[in-house]
Image (cartoon, rainbow, N blue to C red; front, side, top):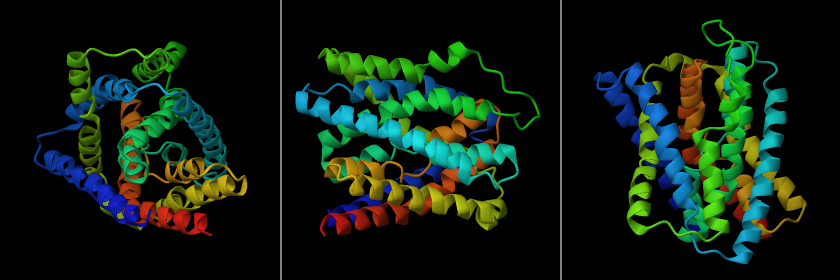
Length: 318
């Protein structure tokens, strides 16, 4: 586990470097606001759903299913706890738009785009993806329900009430692909190789595409606002240090299996999900704050994620 500290640091650094492609593309006018929004829609409705579906194409095993169900339950408990904690912790932030983004950025982590590579380093290729898929299952359900409800609270940046039909909350690409993935795994359905390879290639685009989109959004952010705002550092401390160590500590005190202790600390400690900025852009909320939170948490996670792994390893060896 000690080597994983350095391997994870490299994975996080790689993730952040991809963001610069988006920044450069926006600065050179290769991307603009309209094209960034279209890429966001493509990611949410095409590449990400295919990534979710293909992640469930693994051999069925009863013990794996039991572990997966445990991780799903843990993920549900963590997301609900984070929603309640974020609501209370960001009460001091007076700006409603910014407060909504802080809450969303704390609740929803980069559990797939960065979480999968980190879990592969810690648990191995097959098990890492498998565990991540079950954790991400509730993430997808929660972000397409509570996440949208959260962004709909109050008004958007234009002072308009965000109105979303109930059908869009429960019938969308993220929810549908999650259920398809569960059916594929539970009933041992094998996707034909040609279809699987094509779907996986498209799904694999999610990781770099999401970072390019974030880079495009970050390029419009005021650097002074990003690095000199005290509120941003308050958010970073809560997001990257307090929450993962607190949740991991609770799992340890409850004497949960080592697997769940690691999942309980690592996944909440991932930087904020790219979807935070993408959803904010899509639903006309404060996309600048969303991009700022994602960019800052990704940058500082280069240090925080290995630190959390180091603390976990030290405690579990005691």
